[in-house]
Image 1 (cartoon, rainbow, N blue to C red):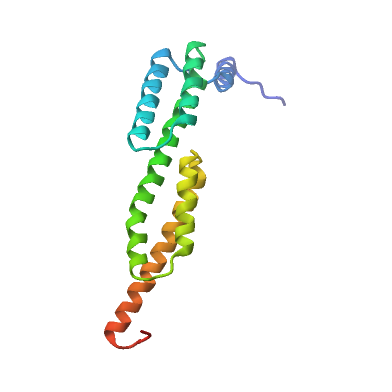
Image 2: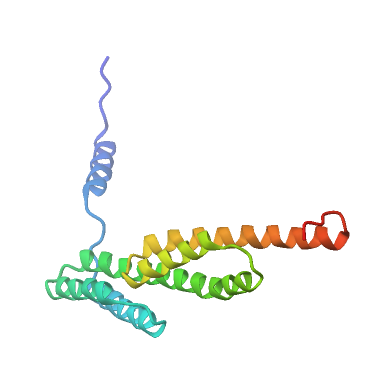
Length: 168
């Protein structure tokens, strides 16, 4: 025996199907405008931190064009990209700023840090070229190397003080 779907159930099923096929709510002009303001502030923060913003400015100009064309959804995607880029760039800059004195300290202690210096330089170069993912990768590598060297140096000092390991 074939079972049929009752009329109210069929309507509910069709309504659910229709709702799943409808696109998500489109962004409003006000939402888009707020995203533009946020993106402009993000760029200002980058400039205040001394970071280059040529490419990110180009992204903002594309977003403004999309805003003018009433393409708010795609404009918001670009402005969110600007915010994410700002966060990444500021994180890299903070990491490099914190590493610089640590590298100097290791140098004055006569510790070989060539690999850390190389990674640090590569990160600075990538940062100046607005290649933030590459800058982040090199900065993280330099930080890991410095942390390893500092840990090893601290362990050696502790062992020397304890008199159990005299290499110097």
